[in-house]
Length: 107
Image (cartoon, rainbow, N blue to C red; front, top):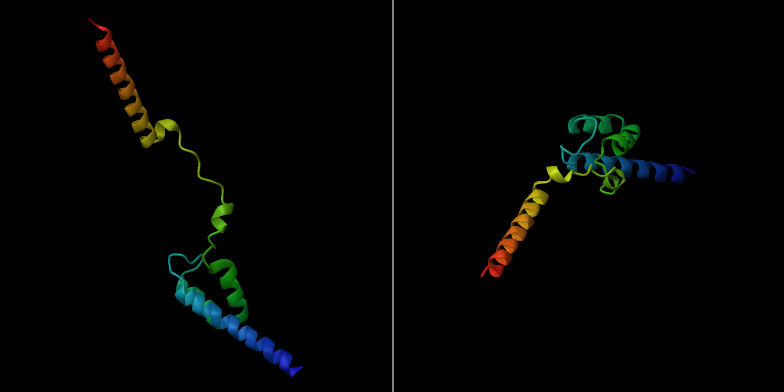
């Protein structure tokens, strides 16, 4: 029985050390809800609960989390500069071809 509790204690210690390391290596701009320094204090002072709080509320969102977010709202064609440039280029091309065709028909 002591071996079981000792093993559980080692797992908790490893979990705590992992969370401390994770807080320290996470970029300050990616940390959620609290500043990085406060997360470190929470994880150090409240080892088990603080570690769980860090993983749930403080750690940066995983990349696949962005897949669940709704897509960006589409841009209307008249607001899209690239679309307008392409449209203008096509109009100019059609006008040029029409002028060439008219010049070719005149004797």
